[in-house]
Image (cartoon, rainbow, N blue to C red; front, side, top):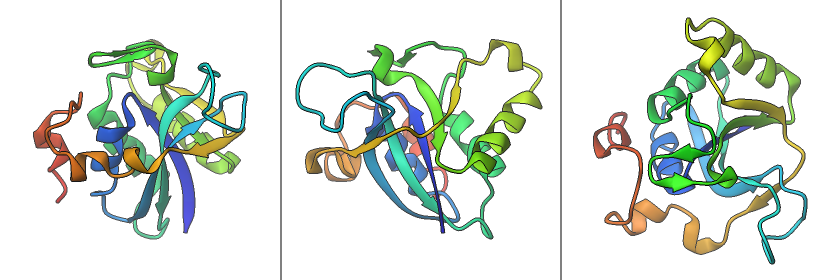
Length: 156
């Protein structure tokens, strides 16, 4: 199994979507690339993200990127839906350079590559979100989500 992190606005919907994808074996709601090791205190630069464990023999990073681009607005800087702020930026993070190279290659092959603001960076740190945020839309399906319900259920 391999691990990659996707930031696509509010993590509730991103997790609900990603966990339905073929080859994804587990997901976890969290925060990536902040400057502290805890979530206590003021905002520290993190991006809300979903830690995604996947089987690379079933799904590739290129395919995961294609799925990810179905649920984000890749042209919107620090905003997805009604969620505004740097913590809602879009991004792909990994400790494996090969994952980052594959994510960059996916973006580079697109005709709209010059307009895409999705950051692709090494993972510098990760903090698991509180239990109340884990699988939030499964437990509270009427909560707000910027991702259309049809997309959330597309791969079920």
